[in-house]
Length: 299
Image 1 (cartoon, rainbow, N blue to C red):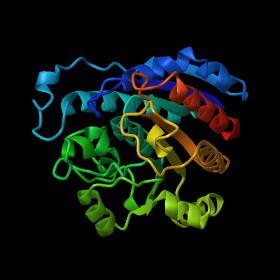
Image 2: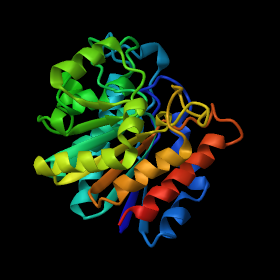
Image 3: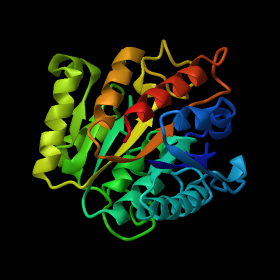
Image 4: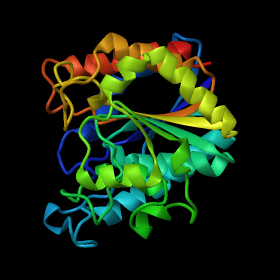
């Protein structure tokens, strides 16, 4: 398979320095060689340009969305590059950076397919809006925006349509959900599975169930979005918003490999690795280990 690496050195969505260094850190730690050893042809498309922004003006464009103008610019460019990648029958691997980049990656994927699904592996639901967000951090809004929920600057990014239908969204591993998000989950009947619920069902059984539902909905592609805080906080010091009671490394690999083996994953985000918070490269090395495991199964 042809894999296009697209780096997005963005931290504006989380408003915390560190994740912008992850794309280059992963490259420096042999990401390309690791992907190539699984018989993939790898094209490194470099990093999306992130315009500089003054922290004193983070609320300049909106009173409850930090750096939103810069985030929209980055994501619009990302969406177009992802769309070109898919239209060329390549697999875009988007490495962040914070999770706000998914607004662009999902927009680019959705424009290339008729009916996509998004599987969101994250300790958080990331379906806040400018009205519900307690922090104003846009990395808590990308999945909501992709479902057409939130501010029009985000929901209309790249093109003015809903990018993914709520019934085709599966949030796995969520265990730190804001009150406004809980209301939205109930209102839209969004599929959300906590680690406890996932273990009760069984990881492999859950993937089979999700696939059956997506086949019923005639989904033609799955976008996989992986946040490092999906993993239990004891394993990942190098992420900005770690949460306990998550999955261990073996469980995480099992889930990702099971998803990869479906053949329906056509694009992937890998986000929220914060190398400034890491301890002796523990999280960085784990990130490489996980990507190695996933792309052994991607065909």
